[in-house]
Each structure stands twice: as structure tokens, then as C-alpha cells.
Image (cartoon, rainbow, N blue to C red; front, side, top):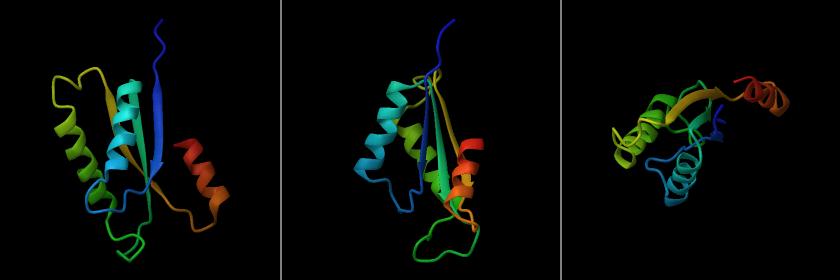
Length: 102
């Protein structure tokens, strides 16, 4: 049986465009793993200075980048997911528990 290598990245990516550092992090995870899950942090509220971009906008940005760097059929042996992980109003321990259960 083959071992499946999985990377889980928890990040906010609250930027209009991915930085070189973001791209390096994602590329390294993709190249070294079979499955990459991006747990995209944020909160369900109106945009503000700390959280100017919605989950949908950031997810679309990341998926556009992925599809441009790893076009089909090059990406057929990879699983690349972007899922939402909301901030917890209760505190960091609750958020950490949500992270562990996602």
C-alpha cells in the first residue's frame, strides 16, 4: 500500500495577490505531497481593514494561481483543496479545536 502524503496549511491570505512567499509555500507543499488542503482563515462579517477580502475572493485567487502553475493534465495526480475555517469568537483554544476537527 502506498502512503499518501498530506499537507495542511492554515493561512489567511488577506492580500489582493499572492506574494512570492505565499507562492513558494504553496508550490513546496504541492511538489512534496499528494494532497494539499488550504484551511483559509477568516470571519463571516463585513469587510474591514484586517479582513478586506471574503473567503470566496481569496479561494478564487488561490485556485486561479494553482491552475496557472499546475495546469491539467499536470495536476491529475494531485488533490488541492481550499476550505473555509472561520475565526472563533470564543478564543484560540476553540479555534484550534475546530482546526483539528476540519
